[in-house]
Length: 383
Image (cartoon, rainbow, N blue to C red; front, side, top):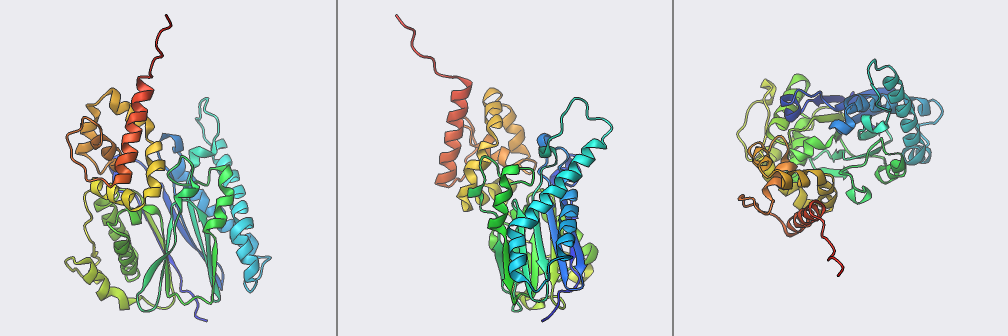
């Protein structure tokens, strides 16, 4: 069995967060638990005022996951694949959650100024993706909107794990801070015996969202296998600047050297100008503008539409109350692509958006609900 070489990871602050002087809310980690057990970790803090300490939450989530896996590895043999499968589905998620809650409570207690605000795990809300690698098997588990791509020796890349948003209720993604979501880890858990993959690429959702199609995302994962050190960080910064604007993180593990067999095919498929990777430059397909990309992503995944729009109910109401706010959103769609979409879909908006039927219908329903909330119907007066 070929062993996995030392993995590498990288987290880059999103272009939108950089403009807003906000911290990077992503975290990533690669750790060697034992000579035959390596772990890849990525975590994405939710951001926003409700999750204002999520940059701390994502970092502590990675630490909690490493500590929990180390503890289990001292008592469970790597040869016991059934035991590790059980761990990935149940015991490990519970252990991670317990350690994470203790860590964020300790961090909260150390804050000098909290005012009258009470502690809430939501303040630290984040996702978490976990991949375990051994010579005999690899496995994964986690919660939230992270993606895992497996790559074969011939350069074939496929998405082997992603969030199914039908599990989420009223949220755009499941979160480590949701106590009722612990059971959802099992749906993301898998264990692959006798793996044939030559590489695994674990990403937070900002990477995939920056690509115009899933095919481009898979080709991008292939390209990342050949890029090391500062060139990877520079490439990820370019991705977020020209794509989603979100923080981005990757954790990569390979067997042997770079998988070069897929490079020519990937570049031909992307159809972009070439620059030398050895010189630290990046191969990149410029995606559609942020508003068009947001529409494309939602129409490609209609199961995400309702949850995404529901969390913006206040924005619908604000735009009804002050229609002039729509112009600012439309002028800078890279800051808030979903907000720009909502603004452009307003009944009085002059912009002509190319929407799929599911998205158009959902937006109309949200505008109708907002108007009914703002101007509730009155029952006729009794004679």
